[in-house]
Image (cartoon, rainbow, N blue to C red; front, side, top):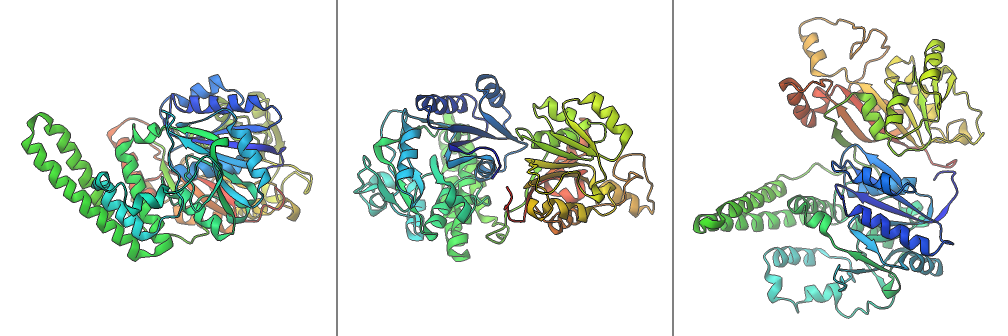
Length: 556
């Protein structure tokens, strides 16, 4: 956690193309917070690479809101975790972008958690836009219930089974007006105690969308924390229109994959494949029926053909299986492809919303110019070239530029309390004689003569790119004035060696962004972008790694 002053509640709003909805969500939070000035509330919006104007609208309307803008969509859990890492509150509220808090919700929720110190997670009462109640889930789902739900709900047999044990298991016998202890809470508005986060960790980022709250509730109960439904004292209106209405087909695929991963994690591969085969059978039956209806009903032929195609895609995606899960305590490396711009443009997007940046190897301030264009101001820049620093001082006067040799240590006295939100290497590691020693020095806690920072972002050229491989096959290796074979490079990296170096230096890559190198809108450029998403090690021109510190955060 940062050294900044703590507040009572941090509201984290993950957003993806939620223009019109996320603005209303943030406005409702700020209005409720203004009703209780004694309650210190901060709002953090984490944008998952939206392509609409929601971020620009938020910046224009709510200057007090912190906006963390990710380059691409890495999933709901990933966005929530980035917001939690930057949160300063005693409690963290994860709020969907298509939800709105009702007056008094925030203060009532904080008071309830203050009064019950053994409660780790809490849910306000969740309402539909018409004011009707969204039933809570009393018990964690078991595999038998999950299988029956897949059969009944997706074949619409639930219309004739409203009194079955399935619906009773979800909502029967619960008095929603008063606080009730639950086994499972929904993720539309989830309050988390900071002590719980410190004990069990962040959300599991292997769940792209869906089941991340189910997994977190199960982990919280295993750590002996109580889960509480807050009742009528704290209310939230959740319409579900952001993903359900605009991105219905994508939503189904995302939820299916997260569902498979959940049952694989907690019940093993037999349960996973039993559910996969059930989904495949139902989807194929629906595809056959839709194809038959498209032939029988000519007036709606296009609609039924599209439905048949969607069900076929669902079946194929479910049948394709999945890559094996990594260890439970290790995050999966997320990969995104950036179709335009060089490494500095990508770094500026990755660092958008970041406060306090240390740029190691700043040169003439090129990265600082890109950051400034995105509304981010670097705090300190270090470089060994005196002339470059003089030029940089004229270009970026707001940055403190310091001359220093990174391989001889940092010009900061250990224990001085110097803190940075992120350390950046913009095409620098390949120029160092011993990059491992520099990375190791930065990954150590401040108390061990390191730096009080837990995030590192670096761009590294990919010498395994197909252009270089083609040169080697022709029997030539020609150094260049710039580019992948820059004659000033002391080291060359492939994707595997770059990841290995970062991990050995105490930094765990959490996300990797790929740049194609060809910026021109040519056929070759479009082909490189397409192939780069499939084979990044071969078609990636540069890698931008967003890493977190593996050492304990004892000084942060």
